[in-house]
Length: 481
Image (tube, rainbow, N blue to C red; front, side, top):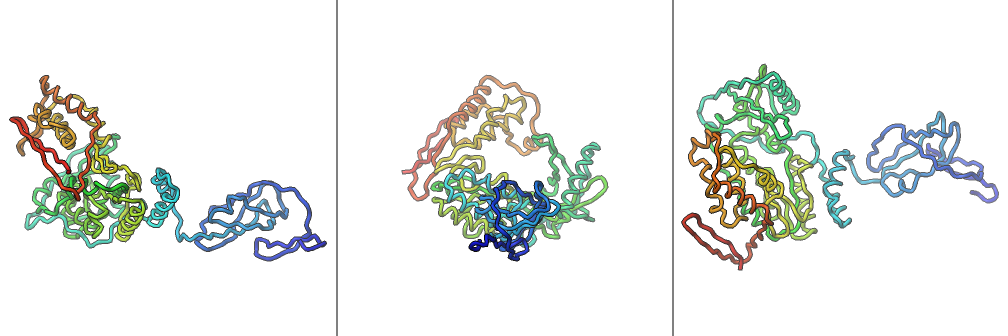
């Protein structure tokens, strides 16, 4: 306003200044809507089209709402020349980011960090995840490493296995799955003399899992002796950690490029085509060792200090939150440089309790995973030797939590195959358990319902072993002084 002239000078949407007479008017709270969705690059500005349904052929002063003033998009006050219910306003992106985030990634970052109560901590973690958001991209990716050799067969001639017969419906599933693999670049057309049959395995949700039966190929493959990380050693390493982040790779094997000489050996056929993998396929005998060697190399000096991997399950562990931010940032950077992709739904970020390798870990304590335990508790009395064997083997994974496990399980241990022939054939004949065997089964389930917890050992303190033995079993307790 200029003195007695009662005039108002304002910029219009084209950046030019105009002077108009000032007239007292009432404020109208009426939203203006974007005509089209737009993306603004960082530190940029543009004129955007808005629509205003109430007035037409009017000149109005536009004032942004308060919530627009507090976020990254700046919309200045301006004069609107409304024509055909449309006008233009200036929008300015004053944010530092160079890329936009997909709604899926935004949602995942928010969901995976909502458990962090401290806002400062939560924002710090979110900042790291946003800077490394490419890790959560669902587009298939091949990691940035030399082609991997995993199937050494020496001078053995090619093995050809005839395809298994299947229904028309299953044939259609095979065609659909191979088409998906072909579009992702994970398989290619082949003229290989090798061939292994396709197997469709029914999953819990009744859908089919596409697999290749590589048993004959694995039988002639020279074994890769690279060791998998010892699970007990991993747990010992987590003894004094407080914060955990768990990463799960998205189809980890399919991110590993396979050497050209190995590709021909992975060949398989559908009813009218022949293909071979360009990436490490599931079911290859040396797959776990190949992946373990690879991830150990990528983690480098961080391994066994604040990051561990058991094949494609990575855990980052730290004593303090500040340490965890540093460790999380470094491992994310390493995986990003390698072009790895993660499975967002199976990742856990900056937690004080996590499930890892079938165990629940928290503040130096370890318990069986509640999910796995519930599966065992819902198991019915076995009706075949195979079913009894599976129960014993599943419970045996948690034997360190159950006192006198060998004595309790002895009555049903006889169903565990002791020879290769028994393991290969399986034992599916119907059985009726004796009362002693039923009691052993029920007693194992009872022990699994108790609060099973152990303290993780601290390798900095000395150990003491107490042992005991009987005609039916031996036992030992590891104590820390």
